Length: 112
Image (cartoon, rainbow, N blue to C red; front, side):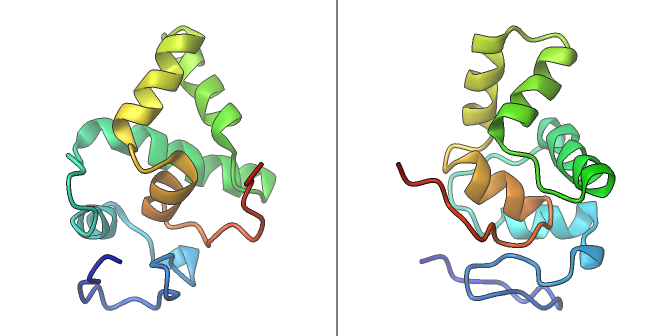
């Protein structure tokens, strides 16, 4: 289990924000520092903003298919987009990207 750093925001025991409105890019950078081995950089931010914008528009957190489609719309082919997401978030889109975008923990994890 990761050792949480004091971020001065309310989070659940798994590290997800309890209030999405507490999120900002600076907080994402601080949260990313908890993920040992994650080379967080500017390339992560468009995906995080996509997640937040998608949620604001649809009132639901986008799954990996929507994130892949976002990357395809921005110039990658489908295979490249999936590889790129895994490169950005090696511990998984739903675990790392969703958390770093300030979304709440998904209530239903796909485990099949």
